[in-house]
Length: 381
Image (cartoon, rainbow, N blue to C red; front, side, top):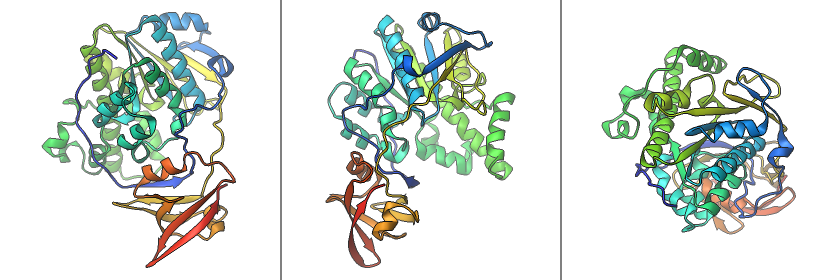
C-alpha cells in the first residue's frame, strides 16, 4: 500500500445499551453468499431509464468518487459495494475505500490490518468495533478482506462518537476547543429538502424541537466529517479514485456527503449508486438506482438479552421471556463475568468469544448476582 495517509485524532470509550443477538462472526472464512449477478435485478438512471451493467461501470470508472449507499443490515447492498469496488480497482489500482463503519481516530489500526500486521480479531478489538458500530461484522468482512488481500487503504471516515454525543446534548457551541478541533471547521446547515427528510424521521419520535435541531446538527457533523476525510485522502493521493460506503441517508437527496464533497472539491466528478427498497417506503435519489434480492446471513446463536456496557463489565438489563437466557435462569441485573472461561469486561470481549456460536450451541455463562457468583449452561437459540 503506497498511498499517503492522513494522521487523525484518537477517541476513547463510552456507554452503550444494546439488544444482544449473539453470534457476530469474526472467523477468517467468509460464508458462501450470492454474487452480484445473483442479487441485482435491475439498474435505472436517476431519471428512471433502464441502464445496462456494463454502461454503468464504464461511467463510474470515469468518476473521481463513487458513493455507494447501504442499508446497514442488507448483505446484498454490501455485495453491490464489493462488486463496484472490484470493477473500479480492475481499472485503476490506485483506489481508496472510505467507510462509515470506523471512526477517524482508528486509522492507524486499519492501516495495520490492511498491511497484514495484525489479524482481524486484533483489528476489531483495537477499533472498538463492537462498542462503536455494533452491526454484524460478517456484512463487511468480504470488503475488508478484499482490501487486505490487495493492500488497498481503508479510510475511517466517521466522527468520534464521544464528540457527536456531546453535540447531541449541547450543540456545537457546547463543545470544548479540543473537541471542536476534531471536527471540520465548517459544519454547514442542511438544505431545505434534506431537513425535510430528517424532520420526517425525527417526527416519528415525538421529540422536543430543540432536541430535534441538535440531532440534525449531529447528522450534519457526520456528513461533513466523512466528506472532509474523503477530501483529505484525495488531496494526499492525486492519482487515486475513491469509493465511499455509507448509509443511504448520508448520500441520497442531493445532500449529505456528496454535496459537502462537491463544495470542498468543486472540480471533481462523483456519482451516487443507491439500492431501492422493494416496498418503496425509503425513497432514494442518485445517478444510479439498483434493485436487488435480499441475501440473508446464516443464523447465529442468540441469548435473548439486553446488555449495558459499563466501565469494567457488561450487565444484563432485560431478558426475553422466550429466549435462551431466560430458559437457563439468567435474570436482569446479572453482571457477566465470563463465557466459556473467557473474561468479559466489555462488549468486544463478549462478541469475540461468542462469534462462532450457532443455534443449539451451548455456552457456560458465569455471572454475579448480588454478592453471589453463579454459573449457567445456556443453549443458544
